[in-house]
Amino acid sequence: MGFSTDCIHAGQEPEPETGAVTVPIFQTSTYVQPELGRHKGYEYARTKNPTRSAVEANLAALERGKHGFCFASGMSATDTVFRLLSSGDHVIAGENMYGGSYRLFSKVLTRYGLEFDYVDTANIDAVRKAIRPNTKLVFLETPTNPMMTLTDIAACAEVAHAAGALVVVDNTFCSPYLQRPLELGADIVVHSTTKFLNGHSDSVGGVVILNSDEIAEKIGFLQNAVGAILSPFDSWLVLRGTKTLAVRMKRHEENGMAMANYISNHPKVKKIYYPGLADHPQHALAKKQMNGFGSMISFELGSHENAKKFLDRVRLCSLAESLGGVETLISHPETMTHASVPIEDRKRLGITPGLVRISVGIEDIEDLIADVENAFEEI
Ligand SMILES: *Cc1c(COP(=O)(O)O)cnc(C)c1O
Image (cartoon, rainbow, N blue to C red; front, side, top):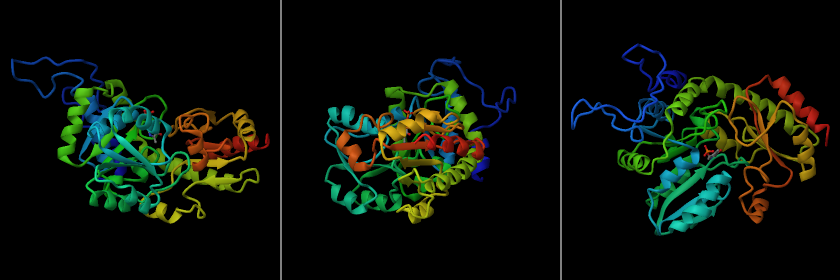
């Protein structure tokens, strides 16, 4: 089936008892067993819940993957993937990624004996050089948050697979509407469903999607053994969210492009990072690897003072962390999402005091541009 059809139908048969079109919220912790040693596939709700099973099947179908596992947050999804590894294993991760992933790796997982190297994964040679005999996993985010740098997933997978390492892609920024890493050779996709997938800024969750039956069995075991599962209600919210994923993303995409064009021509803007612009250094790769350019844009205003004036003045755009909601969210990566990245790394990556990131929502673009225009006048 096509992507839009899958958004609405995959994993969601009408409920057999009543014919309810929408998968009900199975708000239960356990299931009665008709006799000792026999059950209907459900024993205890940490292990399995029908609402969660539906959203897991739905999200797996959208990524064109075979297996999906939902978690209480994007971070718990990523954490569970790393529990496939053992002390002494080596990981290559992108040097610029979501601040919370960096915090998990550097402050938590290193204490359990995992070794991390952070490299510019846009440079395939840098990935190749970082490979060690104990390299088990390459973790990518593309485009990166907030610098919008791309990694060639297929090329990276080739290098990693030659060394026997798994490739994991955090696809949160794109959603499967814009990019499907499994089709490009990645082994595992993770998402924060909190962002575009749920899309309405009213639920926190995560998902792991993959094709390998063998690894899926391990992830399923870990999901149950570690236990950071997505609740029935949040599962239902994400299911409701993905029904409109295709139409939302189309509009995000149109608004993102229009906003990028407006911002890139504004005299107060020193630099803009958006892969849809022809002068983005990886525009060609974006066209090849993605089915559009999304609605995440970062731009440089030159100083903390300018960024503050701008952010204090916007009205319609909400000053908030997070992204991918129907409403436009605007943030200051240096002091908000990326505060846990060491200052010298922030400087090197370009996460400056004047950098502003905008997640363009699906409001009327004229209203959004008027709001931004008004804020630029403050500078
Ligand atoms: C938000 C985000 C996460 C973390 O997800 P939570 O649901 O907040 O735990 C991970 N990766 C990226 C790219 C994100 O934007």
